[in-house]
Amino acid sequence: MFTSFLDAAGAPIDDGLLLYFAAPHSYTGEDVLELQGHGGPVVMDRLLQRCLELGARLARPGEFTERAYLNGRMDLAQAESVADLIEASTTTAARAALRSLHGDFSKLIQILTDKIIALRMLLEATLDFPEEEVEFLTAGRAAEKLAEIREELAATLAATRQGSLLRDGVQAVLIGAPNVGKSSLLNRFAGDEVAIVTDTPGTTRDALREQIDIDGMPVHIIDTAGLRETADAVERIGIDRTWAMVEKADLALLVCDARGGDDAAEHAVVGRLPSDLPRIRVLNKIDLIGHPPGRETGPGEEQIWLSAKTGAGLDLLKKAIWEHAGWQPSGEGLFTARARHIEALQNAQRHLAAASDLTRQLELCAEELRLAHEALGVITGEFTSDDLLGEIFSRFCIGK
Image 1 (cartoon, one colour):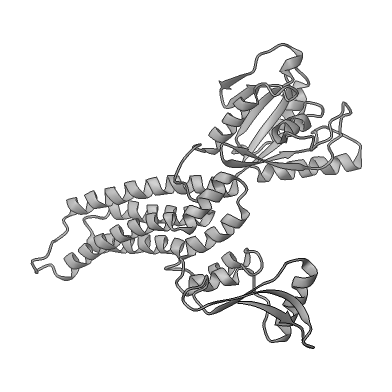
Image 2: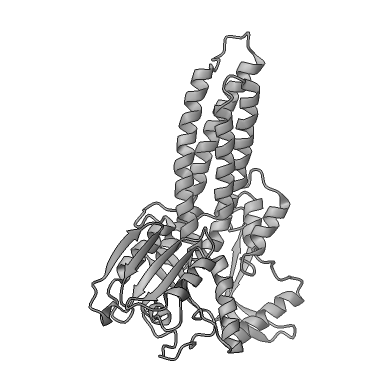
């Protein structure tokens, strides 16, 4: 309905639309009244203040989606995908979040859950009515059915890891001595002059971040201060921050000058890297020595020959990054996922493995199946604590 919105004195604030959504045909499943004005921060703020004067209150972060979940309009995985859709940083991620919102991920979990429930029912029947003529579940048949479920769960877990990469991306930190071309490489990744590049050592004092899209996977490239001994107090702070970034990174890109340099300094940097942090050695400035771009794999290390100045070899580095991350490009049907989903699937996987070892002890096997069932239920919200719900919805934007 087209109408006028009035202030307390009856003066018009704005003209707009008043839309009424009767339960259960609304986003939350409740009666909802929506006001649509012309926009603009001043007018909309006046309209909001008038609503508050009449008894309304501001919505909590994620409250509308939380209500939709509590009212059965969506499960917990779908509710999380609303935030994923809003925060999607690539086109691929946005499409995947929409698939999750439409229930693609939840359907996979439900299929696994149904098969576990069916197996639990047969086990319980065998245990409760051993003398009856029911379809008893022999150890061999139990093992066969469990193997099928475990195979499907492994495939779902692999897809979920891809969905987590799609949502969170990869943190790749550029490290190395001063003047090896880290900032130039960041600019080449970004396709813009986002970092200052000079011949003066120590130009980069603080971390610079740029997000790029590699075949649909978001990659957060972090340029850091050149690592060296310095008396400059500000530069030392930047170097300390560099090491802090390294501790949080998923991948280190060790940038070196292809013409050679201070091997002792490079070895010192490598010696401080966490032992479990994957790294790629990037030999930059090949344009100055006439070396062709290339990719080489050696004992415990991979190196890429490239030129940040010309862009030669950059595609080789991008491919190496997504391979290290475990990304499978151009994967249709992907959905977004979170670390907690992976953890829940891994828990279910462990319980199913334990159940497979206990097929001749049906009571213990049934208990492991129950625990696997509960682990999967955490994903969709079938078995979820109030504390977890509070943590999830508190991260939403205001209202939505």
